Length: 142
Image 1 (tube, rainbow, N blue to C red):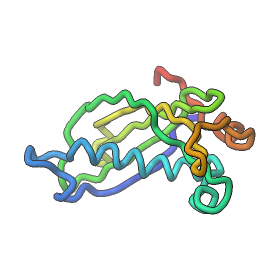
Image 2 (image 1 turned 120 degrees about the horizontal axis):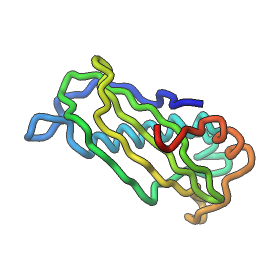
Image 3 (image 1 turned 90 degrees about the vertical axis):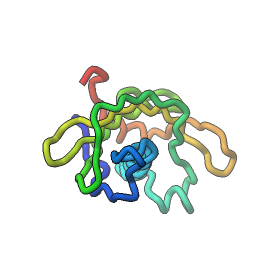
């Protein structure tokens, strides 16, 4: 399977820093929002997070590359795929694009553990989540 769109938004002036481009924290905010969208695809929606199994992925390592600037008023979108599925972790790959010219502006790899929100410990990825995750596998080189 290929990447799927997990986030889309217009960049507000308040998202930008004194240099005039989108602040680094906003790139990670887009990825964070995209992760919750993607988790829903894996069967871990907000009701499951809050009242159900009380599981959610949490970033433990990030590797990021800023490719080009993003300015206020531009529309951005995030695509997400899965590079690796481990016992208690998954490596997610996020790519943030400027919508108008489809230019890659940012990409990051998030190694996330599946966190038991009650006990605050990493737990084994359940079979149903693992099976759905397999459907979003991408080539790590793409």
